[in-house]
Amino acid sequence: VRDSALLGLGGVGAAGFGAWALHRLRRGRPLLEGVGGVFQLMMVGGLISCLISATVGTFVLRWTQQITPVQVPGTWLTWWLGDASGVLIFTPCILA
Image (tube, rainbow, N blue to C red; front, side, top):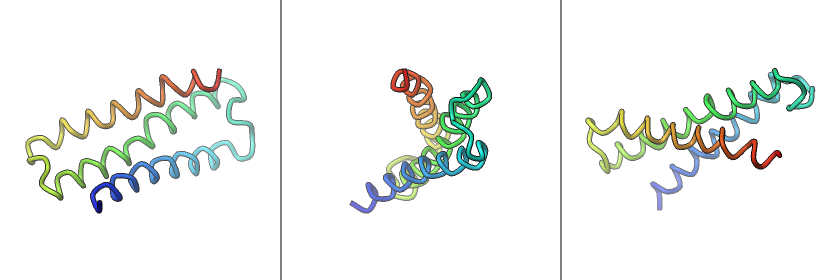
């Protein structure tokens, strides 16, 4: 249960950071106003904020000895690619 809660906090932290960072970058302007806003959404929301969930998730798996030190880089990369591709693929679909 503790592991699941920590993994969940990583996901919430990533989403919270993404929302906070986009709010700071946009300074009250509409999020999808122009190419710059869309680019910021994809970079911050899709690539940068997903670093948090991948890092926390991999740390928790290593801390609980569910993965070996050798598996850490591959686990982290797989986690980040999965989260980032999900955001980059499904966000435009949902917004359309």
